[in-house]
Length: 139
Image (cartoon, rainbow, N blue to C red; front, side, top):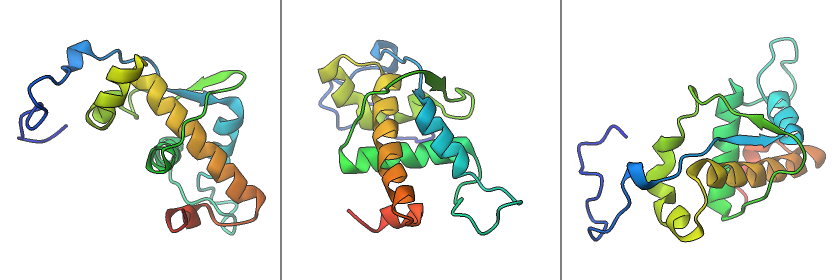
């Protein structure tokens, strides 16, 4: 993760290694994917609330929002995979390590559920004609 600090520093010596973590894939529901695409900047629609430069950036925000609020949501319906080359799942192993060890979920599944919850919160914001970025300030 780009740090010179040993991976298990301060973890009590019993921390999982990356080899022991089930990675899994990352995805969201079709409805959440449509929402995220609608929030990506489009030069032809400069007045719309489209605060993200890419779908991966929007997905990261959705994940962070769900994680920050401690909310997870299962995907419903068809799933859309998030580009694994642009969203590197293992970069999130440290913050989710204890949770996935307890739950038995894969890292990708936990990330996906947080992102799905974040998408739900973002969709409520859109339905209420509020700016999505206002979610940073509210809680």
